[in-house]
Length: 422
Image (cartoon, rainbow, N blue to C red; front, side, top):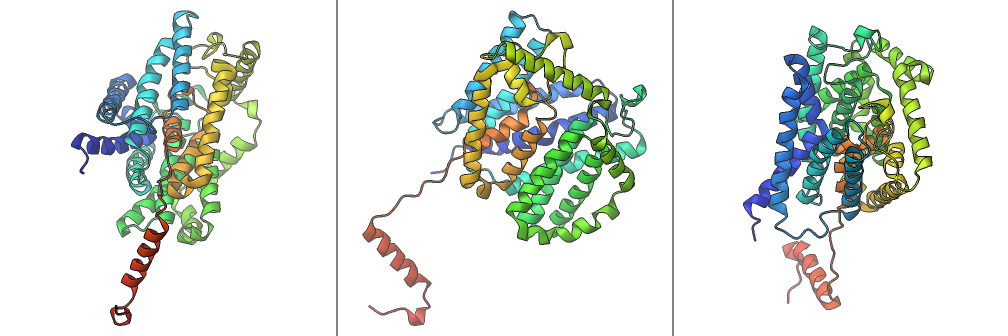
């Protein structure tokens, strides 16, 4: 029986939402940097557009049974965090709580619920990797051209901070590094795990080159470590397939200009004192304050951010932030979700969807260095995909039926001349 047209379109739109969640915002951010307009002029319509797509999927898929397609643990975590944001807005009078609640609902809850309803068993890693890589290539190519032509504006350089790092008005080095990391993972996956046409292989090589250039130029610790661990996981899992990409990695340095200088900047950033940078010092202070807040209110947390540090100052670590905002209750929910996700990954998901596992690894590691719960849309989308994944059921045939089916398959596979006569 053919599926209703709305359901078919909801699956396609679900794929589009996944791609937009992974690399959509950097596309908008680089457009803002080059058009010279206010960030809200482009980003707000973009967010509304993605939410509209999510609402279409939700309305189209809720007509079908929801059992097994929505994870109750993840929905409970969303509900508890939304209550925390609402409580801080109405009763703690923390500036920014209302905006964070709106942002969380639009950019995290809506798209994540839509992608869970769109389904994960029918998710094709090849298709997701292709569209993600192509959109990422557009972003990274625009970043390269903007940097070379001096079209982008580095707001930190005017203050004498991080003058050697690549950034733009609406795209900080962390966002650029994460976008390049996603594109690098998708490109590497296509080369190592799939057989593509020649033009797709060329695009994959271009994706690796541009991604490596942007990651080194952005020089952000979190994205560098995150993408490295994700690729290490793939290499360990598919070590024999390194033959498809190892020769290219040897000549990759020839395609990246000023490679020595970029590597020196990265080495200096990792080898230098952690607190030498003002941003790192502020981040450590905020994390210390968040841990103290958790110790004072260990059961249900105290607030989603410490109001004394101002709007936008959050711990930049999802574990510390969960402890501060939701206490042991939130940490238990997060630990349960991660445990169930790891069980799915190591039991069957790593074979069925290696791309999703790599991207989830990248996002989880990146959130230990930067990011906030109310904006971690990519992480929760990928986590929801693993939580709602199910093994395809396999029904055992009766012995007589199974014997008959096996015999029929063997007879059909034999050459006609050797097929026994009856």
